[in-house]
Length: 409
Image (cartoon, rainbow, N blue to C red; front, side, top):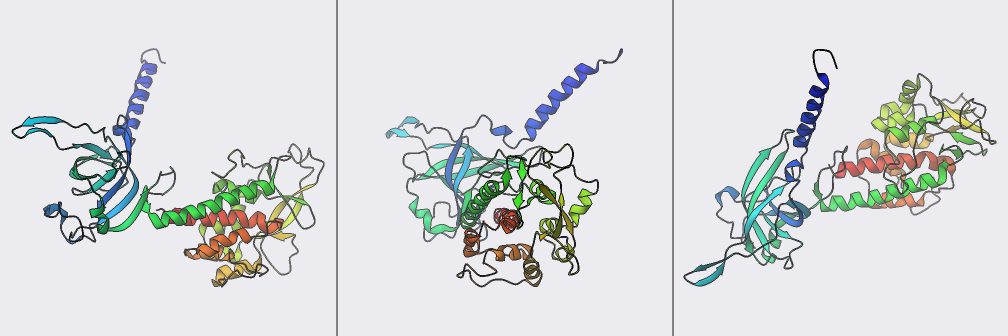
């Protein structure tokens, strides 16, 4: 605070104003006082419908003869659908119930509602009631998102008549911030994504169980000579790509246990791990994937120095026939299969040198879809092979989660 200008109060008001502005930018802000309801929503498919919905000529003509087609969206969330209360009025024919009507809201970045859409509400005892959307008003928030206020009324008490008009099935899911996942996805794609996610979560658990050492509080493996190996480039790969995030054990903190060199970022760019992140086959050809082992047991002021066992770290080098090295993150045959786009036909022989799950890594570089058998074959990995499991498990997790996000985009 200066002598002449009172800056503290000014800054406080500024922070309050900024906070209020942030609330307005929140897509959910206008719906904070609205209760959510889970519905099955029938959104008009503009491509498959042969009648312009704007004409309103067939709104009361769903069924086999209707020219309008719908996308069925299960687990869809609307806001503001209040408890239904029947209002009675006395007219010349006696007491009659007024039509059931109301307003509800649809979140931004989900669907674009249309007059003539239908929905049925799960928490209504008679869930076959069909409500029709009679009016749609759009409100654009400060961040550009569109909130839709819709008026509805009860149209039918039997939903069977709309079932033959459905052309595509979708499901609404919760969006994870920081990803490109949308809220409404095709149901069959969601099923595939869930299956791959189940395998990925299992792989994360396997990796933690096999390689996390509480003694040095990081991931290590035993090489063929039973040396304990710490790979700082693998640790960086795990951190950059959140490989172990949202696994069964969410309490493992991945961090470097050695101070990295000043040129570490440049060195990392030349390794196989960077080629994996970029899905770059050309970079893969020349990437450093072989390594020598350097003793780190006596590195001062590290957790390794306080242990009785000997520990080694990897020093990556470019593959060459005239260079002696202690191991490789990726075997030569796998790199060759990726570059040449070689795929395995089947996985019936578990002793086969190239099992079916390796197709996933090859297809990842070519942006191709994995088959169900390829995903399931991951369970055939011999996890007793320490070196292969240490490098293949995170690689497969990366490939699976890339495919999951692609399915849900």
